[in-house]
Figure 1: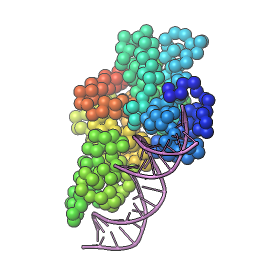
Figure 2 (figure 1 turned 45 degrees about the vertical axis):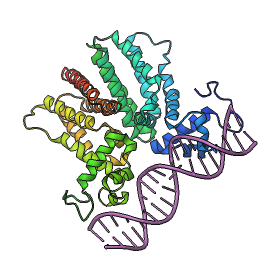
Figure 3 (figure 1 turned 90 degrees about the vertical axis):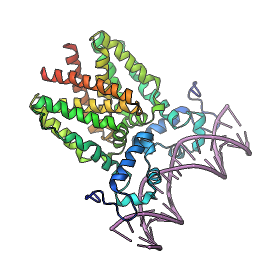
Length: 186
Length: 186
DNA sequence: ACCTGAACACCGTTCAAGT
DNA sequence: ACCTGAACACCGTTCAAGT
């Protein structure tokens, strides 16, 4: 939010997008301990202090990353209609976002100040959708969200190996189908 | 494993149990960033270097904590009989252990070397128990374990407030009952 | 056998100062 | 407006040295 207009890199510095790209790369390579302000500065040829004007402190950096990575989850495709499809789509996109950077999810849980509004929007939309399918929407929302988070955590130990991550994603889809079938069955 | 015989405090130092007690307190108070080797040393009136002979490095400390906190999960009470009760009991005890120190679970996920054998035993026992109830034991094991982990993560944001943690535990029990009922229904 | 001091290579963050 | 140097208060870990 520090520079909402986006890419115009000022003077000699780096743009906000460049910072976030490099931060995600660092997170994917080295996990939560890999993404330090100083390592990020080294990679970008800047000093760590310059970030405080762009993304704020370390928690602000994580929040900015969260906004970027999870934003796509809320972009509902036009063809998706009806509560069951919308629920399945929302959770599939959420898991896809988590799976793309599992270390980010872990880092956010470890840094409560980093929780962005996007996550809250996702759970709210899910609750609304579930209200049309069951008389216990909050119970099922907790089940589905907690399950998605746990499956996301499991991906941290895949440690960036594409084959393993893909297998775990397939398993998540199967589990989600199973849960949604039970939900639909009443 | 450095001193399996337990409590005999040598010379002027502190015992292994004292170290683990203080480490858990630090974790509960200050989260993952609160438990540092140096803060632990300060609290115990020792230097940080003395721990390397008792519990190894930071990951070793977390592994020792994991062993202690999760050990009770595997202690099946005598009165518990039949797969449904055993599954429900095992998961309830697991959630209870996670809920007692949610920050430990988070720290372990962030430190893969800290995974102890106890966790593996828990998932193995769960898989065995599920084999007697469904023809998709691995699918249901993943659902139940991932869900328990996600619910555990949610407890991190309760931040040690007993009332909120208790409410979330009640919600977990309800969700677990719901899931196990669907499992039993085939 | 156990503990420590000193050292090394790191951290996040602030703030006055530079351009 | 943006970036930096220097400083402050921290980290984990190693290793030779002490008792």
